[in-house]
Image 1 (cartoon, rainbow, N blue to C red):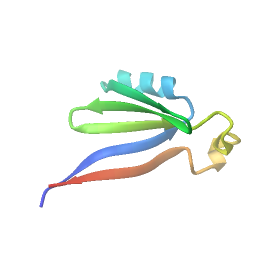
Image 2: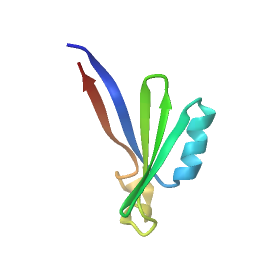
Image 3: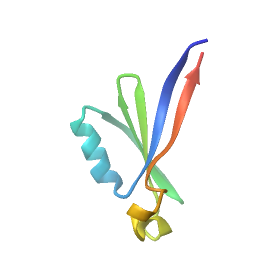
Image 4: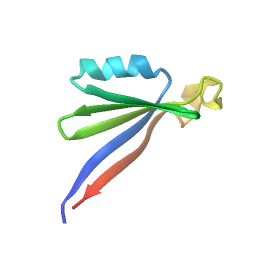
Length: 81
């Protein structure tokens, strides 16, 4: 059985700024998916995919991100062959 990391989801405060940051690290912006409850920017570098999720501005997450565990790493997805 072969196991690889498929993607990493990170909740961010500012999607466009974060996309710019990862571009400087060599990631390519593949697409942005806008949904009613969030927006997700998909970034790729080699075999790694990052999903950068921005919640709506009025979301409780933004009261004080330092005290809220919702900002930052959310989950890790594996690909099993």
